[in-house]
Length: 317
Ligand SMILES: Nc1ncnc2c1ncn2[C@@H]1O[C@H](COP(=O)(O)OP(=O)(O)OP(=O)(O)O)[C@@H](O)[C@H]1O
Ligand SMILES: [Mg+2]
Image 1 (tube, rainbow, N blue to C red):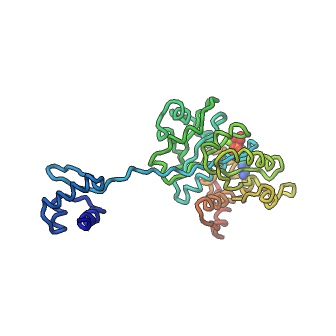
Image 2 (cartoon, rainbow, N blue to C red; image 1 turned 30 degrees about the vertical axis):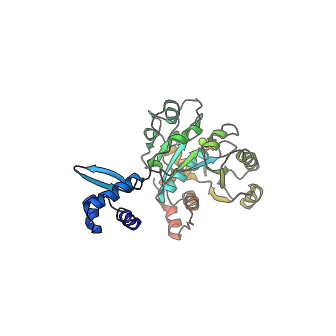
Image 3 (cartoon, rainbow, N blue to C red; image 1 turned 90 degrees about the vertical axis):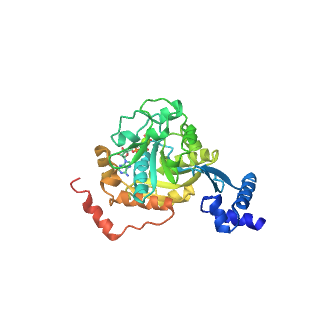
């Protein structure tokens, strides 16, 4: 008897079948098949559908499990070190590798993500999602470059970014990465740390900026976040800068990438277009690709031709 039950369950593994189909397959009488099926249904091992006049059986469906997105905060103790620039271009680089990445403006008081991209008109923002229960999908905006952002309101009102967690449990965000641009300073950052699961520190190659990473690291310990490493920005290979190795040694964190001081970044803010798309082969864009690849678990080594392309690509743009 158990053997027959097992055979029925095996048959229904990949199909949904009517009583007569099962009876035919197992070469048994239809009323016998119906009895077995009803018994399995009562044990909760099968579900029944009525399709017209026939009864159709199926294995119980599992509730839809939505895998939460990776939420990576781009943080720094000091302001003006390039968090917004990095959030935009890292999102672009992740998109380049085919990843569903979206930049989210966690800097709700001094929001700058949309502004850097020339986007100002947002009927629905993060603020409406958190305060007025608006659907987060209606707060996603697409830049002409294809980059998607979730902006905060341009007002100075404070909202609880951490409350966003419950709004992103949607199939749309499955397998995606949210890159969260953060406010400067050590206070407002707490909201970001309770929302993000992973963080990347941004620093300039200067002592005050690096020293702030120590303070941030202390605050991070209070939260359940995983520091992925450091991005050193605006590196000029100047003798007055702290060396990359020194930053790595004192912070005891891996250096994910070193973004050079790059004219294309200033130009991109003027043009309101991510520098990564203005010139995907520029020195900074190649570095963004390396960092994105590291986040996705592989190594990216720019080819010689891409370096040469970098020299000419942006000309005239
Ligand atoms: N790698 C770079 N090369 C050249 N200029 C850069 C680079 N990174 C950032 N900048 C310049 O620094 C300015 C500040 O960058 P950004 O707005 O990203 O800093 P931030 O950390 O987000 O600032 P805040 O803390 O105020 O939000 C940019 O407007 C840009 O002009
Ligand atoms: Mg910023």
